[in-house]
Image (cartoon, rainbow, N blue to C red; front, side, top):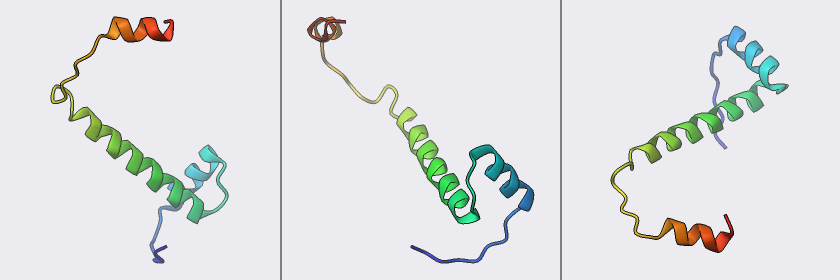
Length: 67
């Protein structure tokens, strides 16, 4: 864990708490950071479009699953 002192926008903090139901600033900041990291990782997945070669039989895979 890293300890730091930061100045936060009180209006944003209040909005974030109301929207999420989170009670403390620490929890809210951790929540926001987790979501930011997840979102940025998801963006990087999109960069792989057209770069991954997949060889398989989708119809065969679906029939095995019963779909």
